Length: 313
Ligand code: APR
Image 1 (cartoon, protein in one colour):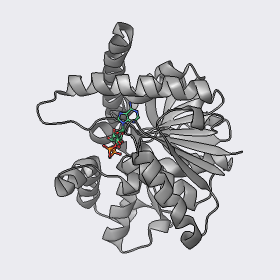
Image 2 (tube, protein in one colour):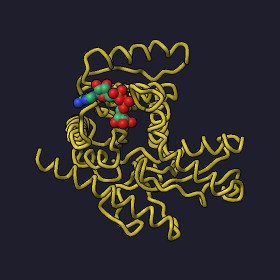
Image 3 (cartoon, helix red, strand yellow):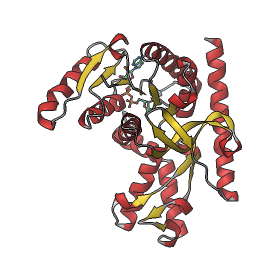
Image 4 (cartoon, helix red, strand yellow):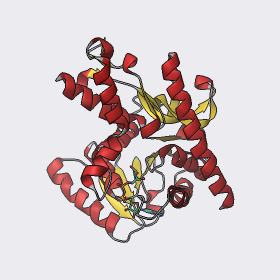
């Protein structure tokens, strides 16, 4: 039986489970959370939606991992949001523990799964999932670039009054602040963006994209984005489940590509049944390379911090 497990039945996780079921990506979708009743209640509500939206994916909720056994894909969304008074380091420690515990338990039940990490801080949590699972690097990667590019593409489509379908784009690097947008490689109906938009307008869109997560938090006040993040994770899961070989910007483990190794970095990744099949490389100019190097430094720092937390656990 094909199966997708979503860990965390909060906003991102529940919405991801709903999207996966509606697309019938697997025969079973299992939603897991530490809270009793929440994953079961949300899963039942989704299953009761099936006769209306017409899907046969069976959604079930659980508080333990036996029900997740034999999953093809695990989408990791559990984690805490920063609370008032909580330092970044406190949050990093807490989420490292959560991701470590959840992934250790889930990986034992599904030794052949592909893990897609969504929990933040993304690059660091993807590394924690790699260590906790013991899986080969091609079966653990993170969702960030698909979301960042979706935001960027939506702003460009709006500004040019064209279909989102015709805006193809790529961002490299870490998630958010250290993202490296590449307007030269952004195409609108096959035309490079700099031929269609003045540089200042592109810069404003890039800036808004970098702060895209904060813009949503500022509006919602009590939570962070989840419609686009869940859609992004499910697009990646679809490429695994359907062996689509999509080329999507993801946090992938580098083994010499871009002259780097032993870290997760946002790069174009070909995703198929076995997970990460190939990191695609592209040429960067001096300015793009400088931004990319800044992103590398930020990600290395985060990975160093979680490494220390993991060693102390
Ligand atoms: N095991 C399982 N579930 C857990 C655990 C745990 N050890 N710890 C926390 N959770 C669950 C919470 O009970 C909650 O239901 O994780 C869920 C998180 O949901 P939300 O607070 O709604 O957060 P959400 O908006 O879904 O974001 C989740 O995704 O985009 C990222 O930055 C975001 O790291 C955050 C994650």
